[in-house]
Length: 250
Image (cartoon, rainbow, N blue to C red; front, side, top):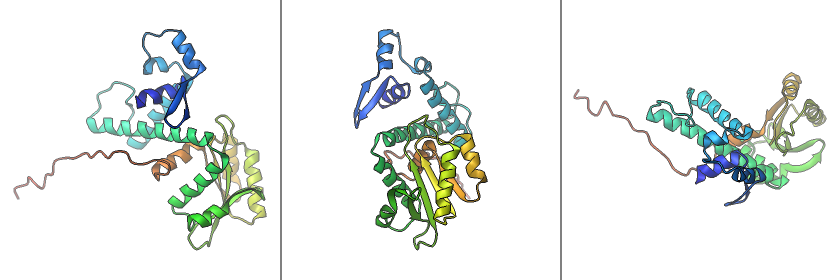
């Protein structure tokens, strides 16, 4: 049921309304009206959003595990390869689900979430100190400041943009953030968005004299998964192998 709901959601035929609730979309009504014989992955592959979801799963499985096949396709994998492929697929779906929840949450939730993630990654001092540093929108062109270390010897200035998919960040906003860093006499900045950056925006950040790190929505949600922010371990599967030393007569 969980995966059926996930796949239907990726194809845009249902949508989540709140925790534990979802409803059919207009596209879903059209699917039902066409009276398909069967709704499976092959059928959902007709929708662009579902194809993009599959492609991301393929990339994740190949890059992280060195595998070219995915669990969407029938191929002769070993059991441990199948588990690794499934693990990459689960994390891909989880990251996308969390990103969708962030986009529908209140704006200040995104700012608090950035604080929480940075603290979990080892930046800043206490949560109360970091919380006071962020959330001051319009403060000289930055959304907040967080200490890079517990002593506050170095600071990172942050820009947070909670944008919808397709509303990309261009080079102009990168240059504006650069100007804000210059006014604050800051050497480095972190630009976080729930959408994405254009290639020209990334090129602009690369050639500016100050270090500006760009974190798009996909990378941000994957960092959340990696550092277990907004998610939890549901089950641990152990892969065991023969202990050769135990059976060695020597």
